[in-house]
Length: 306
Image (tube, rainbow, N blue to C red; front, top):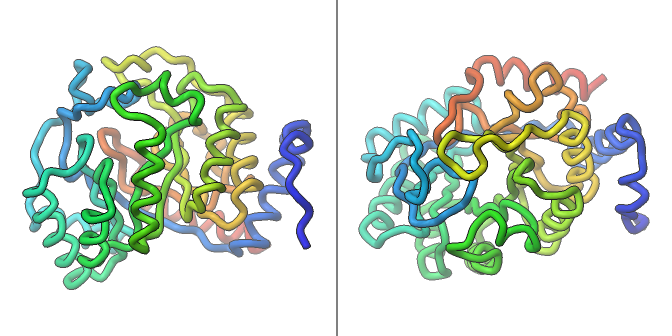
C-alpha cells in the first residue's frame, strides 16, 4: 500500500531530487505516454467576466480579436489539421460566461460533424454550464469538458470578481455528473504563493480531475496582469514536479507560456513530471510550430525510454 504523501517533506527536497521523484512517478503510473491536444478559439472577445489575466475580457482594452462563433466548415478544417499535426484531442473554446442557446445548437452540430467526419476526440471549453447543457454536449459526442480552476480557492477573488471559485467547481461537478471527463488546471504567475499552487493541486485531487493543463502567465498588454514579473525557472519546475507527485494518474499538460517562460529549459519540465502539451497555439497567442512540438515529443519519449 502506498505511503501517504507528505507535502512538507517534498517541499524541502532539492530541485534535482524532486524532479527525479516526479519522473519516476510519471513513468510508474503513466508509462511513456505523451499526450498532445489542440484548440480553436471558436468565439473570441467581449467576455463579460473580469478574469485579470485574460485579453478577451470586455473590461480591458486589448488587441484581442473579436468575432462570433465560427462556422462549421472552418472548425472542421481546424479539426482535420489538428489530427494531421498529431493531436489526439481537439477542443472548441468560446469566450463568455456561458453559451447562448443558439450558439449551443450550433456547437452540438459541429461536435457531431467532427466525430463523424474527422474522428478525433472532441473537448470543449464553453464557460459556466449546467447538467442539462453538458448532457446534450455529451450526447453529441463530447468526451471531455475543460474548465480551469485558475488558482486556489483562497486566491481566486484576487483574480476574478464576476464569478466565484464555487461557480467553477459547480460546472466541474455538473460535467462529471453527466459522465464527461474533466480537464482543469490553472495559471502560475498571477501573484499567488506556493501555498496557493498546492491548494489548487489538492482541489484538483479532491474533484478527481483527469487532465491538468498548466499555463504560465503571459502578461498581456491592457490586462491587470500586464507588467507582472516572470516566475523563475526553478519555481516553475518545482511546481510542475509537485503537481506530478500530488496527481500521479493525471495528464500534466503544459499550455500557454511554456515557450517564453521555460525557453531552453522546456525539456526539463518533461524530465520532471509533465507529459502532455497543447500544440498549434493558444487562444490569442501563437505557439511553436506543430512540427517542432512533434519532434520535441519524440525526443522526450526516447529519453523516457532510456
